[in-house]
Length: 293
Picture 1 (cartoon, rainbow, N blue to C red):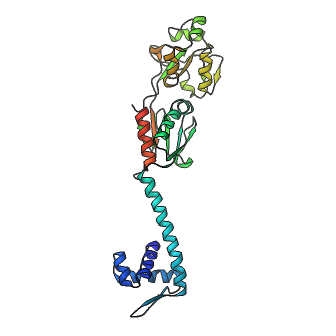
Picture 2 (cartoon, helix red, strand yellow):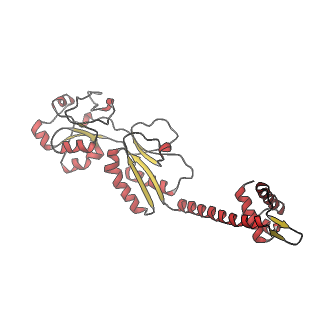
Picture 3 (spheres, rainbow, N blue to C red):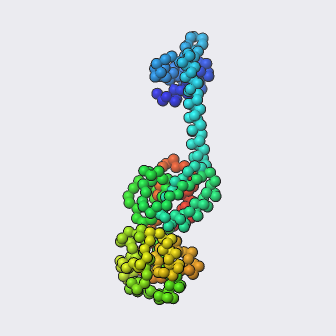
């Protein structure tokens, strides 16, 4: 028998003063009440109650055991109340992970807006360009860029991750404007070393699959390459999202649009859970509202 249920029945019998009263409180027969109590006594190897035709009384062991049962049942009730409250309204910790550039420039401000809307939620964001294991590493949700492998995770599509090729007006004034990929070997092409080898400056269009020779400045930080481009050193190829503000302000000029790589898919991924908590469902809904297709 379920031990906690047997404890509940035992306490009901103590409070009601009879098996019949406990049976009424627990919505079961008096015979079943007796089975629960006998199961506890067999487990403990001691009698909990003494009964006569007119009354029942706790043994000394039964009295001490009843005290502990009340404390245990109170703790269980408190835990259930906390869980129920967490399921009723968004609260608690959300552990999220995302690629460094997207997470720093776009996801972080969105999370700040989400937290303003849901003051009882805390978000722990880890920025990492490797693919993390959500289950093994204890994350609730991840943003992933690129094709997804087959898995049991839920994947919700976001806007595709399109690229832009840009240079500053100063650079173009000093070095000229490339019109086709054939012009790029004469320019400084800033390289992000976090790219996969097959993705480095890979353009499409009339010269589909062309690999452009990188320039003299390489970095594992998109922020560093963006600053180099803003300071007039070279031509940068990065996510359009990352360069959008600079393009809109005229600090960077878009180039070679017809040769841009195809946008990569971007998804929110999280473990499948039919009892998902409000903190996760509201976080997912908020990010879909902000970055959805």
